[in-house]
Structure formats: structure tokens, C-alpha cells
Image (cartoon, rainbow, N blue to C red; front, side, top):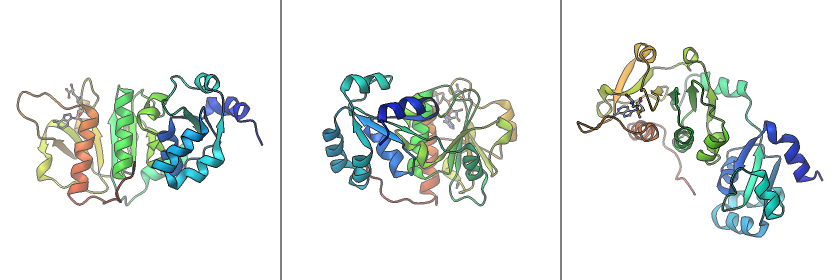
Length: 254
Ligand SMILES: C[S@@+](CC[C@H](N)C(=O)[O-])C[C@H]1O[C@@H](n2cnc3c(N)ncnc32)[C@H](O)[C@@H]1O
């Protein structure tokens, strides 16, 4: 059997860090390839799995190697309360691009145009996974696979297609751009093949994106409030899509 620490050191540079029990649980549920997983307390991790994730307990039992607390702490930027960490293989970009480009589509793609905040990007990926969106595309310099984004996404990058694209290479489909100056979303139905675009936290939608959009859409907001947070805007929009005919999904577990 391969020494888990040796394997960790060999592949860490090219892998996705799954930081904590919940990230590992989600990644396994959504088909991630996980070559190595460690914990400082195997008993506690398996008890947690028995309680919260019996569907992946056997796989965790086979995968988790116990290492001393100091060894675990040295492998991660900030030790997680569950003392679990794993490395996953990043999905192939060409496969992800094919998923994003495929039509007809049964659920929207979310586009974050020039996002700045890594925590927002992680929260949006978690939302997209929860609503069964086809994927999350970012434009600009933020890397949607940055470890802080993956941490914020709770391992759910493996449940939806996540890629960075050029602004002029967005997936096909009618473009709905969200902006307080648009038409009230409550009078609209968002189609399953929609591309839902959101502007940057700092400067909102660019003029170029605004000019290309098929529909400019506003979330209801009382006068004198300037805007909502980016991730909460995505949450309201995906909820609206799901509530007006969008794909239903099974009850979500922890
Ligand atoms: C924090 S806001 C951007 C605020 C920015 N200062 C501006 O001038 O637009 C980030 C993004 O969330 C979405 N958003 C926020 N509030 C919205 C609203 N009331 N209606 C539609 N979209 C909204 C938009 O896509 C916006 O570009």
C-alpha cells in the first residue's frame, strides 16, 4: 500500500485540497476522484460519517489514514475542527467545457463577471450545486479553484461544472444579466437554458456585458438600498428560477 504522506507530498501541488470532513463527504458523493485522505482522529471521523453521511462511510473507512495531529496540521493552511483533509483530482477542463457548452440544457449556467471576493465565489458554487445548476463560470482574474473558494464551496465544486472563461466565450443560451436597473424578476420566468450573469462586487456589470445582454433583470429592492451582496443575488435568482418552473430536486441532506 502507498504511504499516504508520500502520496500526499507527490500530488499536493496539482490536486484540489478538500479541507474538513464536509468537503470530503460532498466530493465523494458527487464523484470526485480522491487518491488520499488523512485525519488526526479516525474514530471521530468515522463516527461523524455514521451520524451524518452513512452513504459514504464505507468509502471513508477504506480511504482515511490516521496521522499524528502535528502531521495533519502541517498539511493544511489552517486546521479544521474535524481534523480531516484530502486531495482530489481536479476535473478535466475539456470535459467541463463540453458540459457548459452542451445544449439543450436543463438548468442555467451562472456567470460571475470579474468577481473579486473568494468567499462569494465559494458561496455561489455551493448555491449552484444545491440548485442543480449546470455550472459556474467566472471571467477575470479570480481562480474559481483557488483553495479559499474550494473551502467556501464545501467540496461542492464536484457537483457542478466550474471553470474560468474569457468574457467573449460564454456558454450558449439567452443571457439574463442581473442589475438593479433591470426589469423586475417577479414578472419573468427564467428558462432552463438561461445564462445568468452577475456583475463584480465593486463595479457591477460592465458596459460590454450590459450591451450584449438579452434581458436586464432586477431583484426587488426598496428605494435607497444600492445593491445586494453578489452571492445573495445569485441565491434569489436561482430560487426564482426553481420556483417558476426550474428543475426540482430531491430533498437535500446535510
Ligand atoms: C454588490 S453588487 C454590485 C454593486 C456595484 N457597486 C454596482 O454599482 O452595481 C454585485 C452584483 O449583484 C447583482 N445585484 C445586486 N443587487 C441587485 C439587484 N437589486 N438587482 C439585480 N441584481 C443585483 C448584480 O449583478 C451586481 O452587479
